[in-house]
Length: 153
Image 1: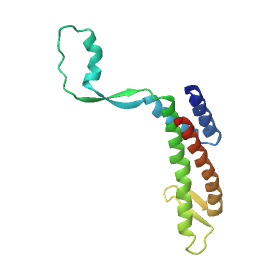
Image 2: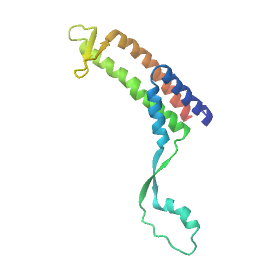
Image 3: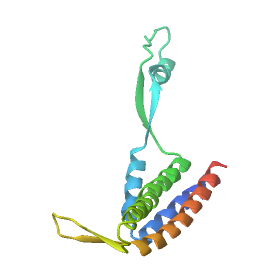
Image 4: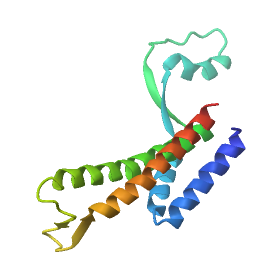
């Protein structure tokens, strides 16, 4: 994939997240991306530019390493978004199904309700619905894996 194609895929994937109510995830990844990637640079790398303007003067090099921010590459941006989707959507579905599987052998339950004791809000875990979502998430997992391969090639 070219850089433009990768940027387009990033934008389209971000728009899909907004459409399905996960715009907050796109925004969080975009905020991380705007901060840049920290890379380790040696003191000699930092001093190379300073040496060009200094003739006859020796700069002492200690070999220390520093962190310096740089912009994400298009590939790194898209991989960051893919990883966020995997962590938020796919892993959440895996947890939901594991929880369901833990409760099913205990009395053939079909649903479990979790109650927040601070707010009294409840979240129902419907095991059939969770399995249906998990099937769709499996397809998403495959599509994201294909997209990763496209980025790497």
